[in-house]
Length: 112
Length: 114
Image (cartoon, rainbow over all chains, first blue to last red):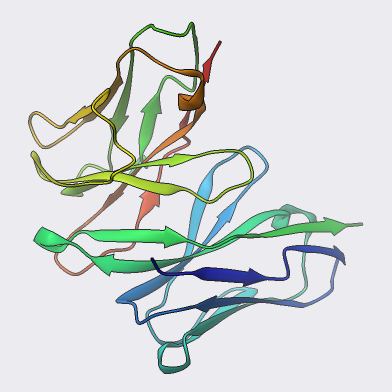
């Protein structure tokens, strides 16, 4: 099956710092999504980004599908950014549904 | 838009008992998914519905697991004869369909099998 590797596995930042999270995948995919899982377990969809660049506030993401990687940029980090960041690659199923394979995750802690 | 709702939030059961979880997707979403997440891992796909039709099942979904979506709205996931290895967070997600495949997840049901 497809391999989805994320780096770094753990990251500690001071509030206000910037960071880049990386997601590498081993095969062609139909789409890619980034999620934030907060300390209470809720998964929040940050981006649906099969290719190109998108921005949402302090977050932006870039996917280069031909080179099989995606990057998530967090600027001016805040303590509420703490949690686990997952990338997930998607394959279209029978009937058009989207099966996601999740990466290994990056555990982020933002300190005051 | 109230988001994806799951019930219960937590379930503790004894080995061998049956449990059932409920998921209410975002109202206009016609695709519904079940995932399972164990500690320290990312979620893993279990099954998916297009309206009331169950179109895909993972090999992770043993014969003890059954999922339904009777009227194309809410869904239930039942686990029969629970085992300790079933302990996990069970997550439900939905998407709009029609090429709009951004998934929105519920808060999950945390199952503990004693």
